[in-house]
Length: 459
Ligand SMILES: Nc1ncnc2c1ncn2[C@@H]1O[C@H](COP(=O)(O)OP(=O)(O)OP(=O)(O)O)[C@@H](O)[C@H]1O
Ligand SMILES: [Mg+2]
Image (cartoon, rainbow, N blue to C red; front, side, top):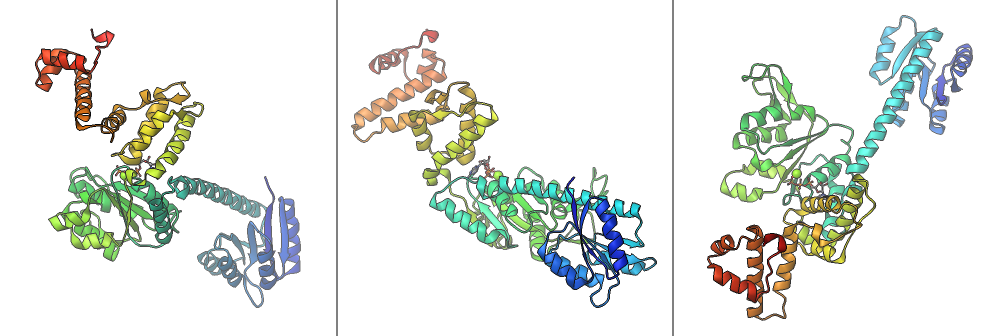
């Protein structure tokens, strides 16, 4: 275990000397100061794991020193030594943020216990810091892919608003990354080491939603067998992410508005008013302004939520980001599946880039994961591992090429339709003919005209 660096402050030579010897024996580096002034000079010069200070000292006393040190570093660990019987001094020290107190004269045993407590606390704090760092990396900007102008504007906006308390509304089609952005906002705000609570509001009935949001008291409805905190209480001092805010019923909207305006609410079935400090981020793929016009969303709530809006563009409007996203997801899914890094063939790549991506980034991610898995040990992923909907686009682009006449386009389109129906009907020609409203002879004629061959396994 590494040595602990201790700043020892006491005006009595004999106490300083004896404690210095004692602490050195306990595997500590000790710097001793005989008054608060000296202590502060030392404190600003070196890094200490612990400040051990006497309470009663001439001029600046231990309590003042404690406050000054915590003013410099609010993470500082200070243990106060007080004379036997002066419990009110100990209490004052604890109130001012002391980590612990010791009564003088300090016994060896008690000193050991205290040092051990400090060590364990510091370990825990370092570990939390480490987790937090991991989370910040995972959900910070680093993880949001895209260099397009639109995305850069969004990064700028996040940077400006993350560390404020403003309510934020994130809008965008499904799969554009709304939740990802909400994460980035929380982990880039001063609330980052406080809770980040999420609630998906769709698919919850009004009663369930209210009890999820505000909590409930025992007995307030059948099934409420004990008091329960809601998401607002759980998110106190932190951030609450409400996904799909558009599906919140009108009655609940009123209550939500009140929390946003006054920061207060009551639990379902409760009478006590609860106060919370919560930063709210809402998300929706619907057009709230339109819902306000239709009368299905409260206008006052809309304005409260809409203080700052982050509009995420659909993927097709930032086509230049597609190849970066592909690389990112290829890295990720090859690694996750223990495969050597794969590449897409040129044809596959152009299909991926030209596709419209109605399901946006989520759909792209799924297509890549799927193709990494399906292509097994092949290193180059070809179009055969891409889903049908992507390939249909290819044939469409091919059909409507500018150098074709209308007749050529129609013929090619007809061929495409016939092929699709035959495939869907497993090459049952009578069935396919019926679906297309043709008789069998006409179907055979067209197949001959377009050179459509019946596959061997369908003969
Ligand atoms: N810019 C991006 N960079 C990297 N990954 C992204 C990006 N945008 C979205 N993703 C990924 O795409 C998936 C969908 O994103 P997310 O869940 O945030 O979308 P959403 O807008 O909340 O969708 P929905 O409206 O359907 O809930 C996630 O796995 C997310 O990590
Ligand atoms: Mg979402």
